[in-house]
Image (cartoon, one colour):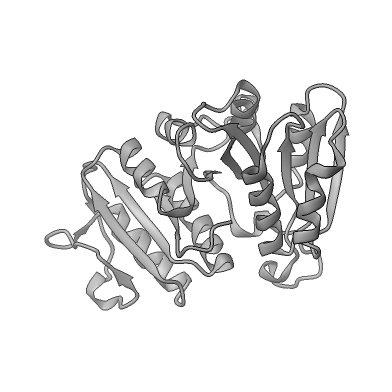
Length: 280
């Protein structure tokens, strides 16, 4: 991964899914020791605020407060996250630029771009909005799609002894890998993400994966436990099954192309957040 100073950036539009995505992004920023950038794009109307005055918050930069006691969703999210994560460097910004081009531009400076998808609707899976799909299809950096209702403890092993959920080990990171792809960016993201969490990495691939594909990454991340799962044929059903016991599902797309049908199906139906990573 890049060693440049980057951010974890999340798009805020006031929806429940974007606020849950912001919470996920805040935890990711803490794990990676990066600033969190909240971005509100377009010209959404302001919504009624609460009782706090944003001028009382010292940890948030670059927020323009609406007149009176009205506050946009961006401001409320920044305040809530600053209280929940007092050590986190939070940058909140607005732009009148439409959402897709604004988020694509922000992704260039981000380690990861995080967006919300809507809640589950039975067997139909998660309806993913046009903005999320449009950005995931074109961004130059990894895009993580977080469904509404996702909680921080959902990415950890369930606790049964009454201990705090935040102390439980992380669930595996699951990587869907095409053996025919030259995908160092994809593999590197999955290994790095697992290492940051001290989580195991489960690699699901079809047919036989050349030994040389993962060998350099195993040497680079010796502390990461790696398990390979070979599937004869379509690995999609196995990946969906694995997502029910995963903290993050990582899939790739060819640079310059939209996610394929299999990746789009995983984005809609996976039971955990999905990272879409561009690669050669």
